[in-house]
Structure formats: structure tokens, C-alpha cells
Image (cartoon, rainbow, N blue to C red; front, side, top):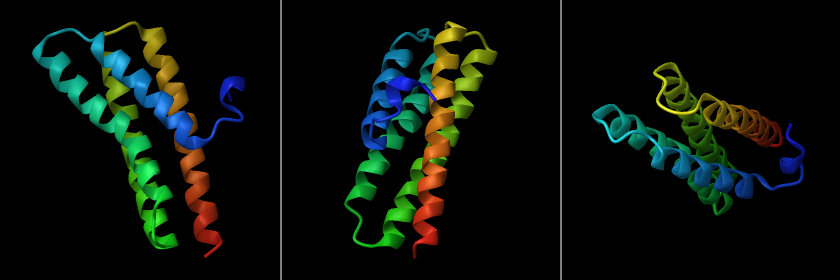
Length: 121
């Protein structure tokens, strides 16, 4: 895990990730594919943190788990779009790969949070 993120809260970490996604999409080519894939990437990539924020205000453990599962699904979708961006050579591969690595770490964290929350029920 990147030392920079070891002590950062998941809400802050996913906010930073969302900002990086927005910056990445702003660099994408202004083509039909760029607009379409960019739109999908920005929606899923920023939705991760938004759903985690919503989970923080959950009225029950069940609602918390539900929102965290949505965040996890959005993270998995984001990984898909980032891999498409690499495969079709839309952007600098090293920048996108760094985001994929961060996204994979977020997926692991979310999976652990969900698992631990379920086991504490």
C-alpha cells in the first residue's frame, strides 16, 4: 500500500481518487469514444466516494452495508473503464495504471469494511 494513504480515512481517500478521476477524464480526447468512456468513468469513479459519504449517515447497519456495497460496485465498474482506456491507448498508460492500483486498494478496503460490518451484526 502506498505510504501516503496508510493513515488517510477512506472518505478522504475516495475523495482524492474522485478528484484524480475528474482530472484524468479532462485529459481524454474530444471524440465520441472519449466523451462516452469519459462520462462513464467520471460517473462511476466519483460515485465511490459519494456512496461512502451517504453510508456515513446511514440509519442502520443494513443501510450502511447497502451503501458500501454500492460503492464497491462502482469501484469495480471504474476498474473496467480504466482498463478500457489503457487497452485503446486513450491516455498515458502510467497515469491510468496508477489509478487502477489505487482503485484496487480501495476495493480491498471496502470489501474488508463490508465483511467486518456483516460479522459484527
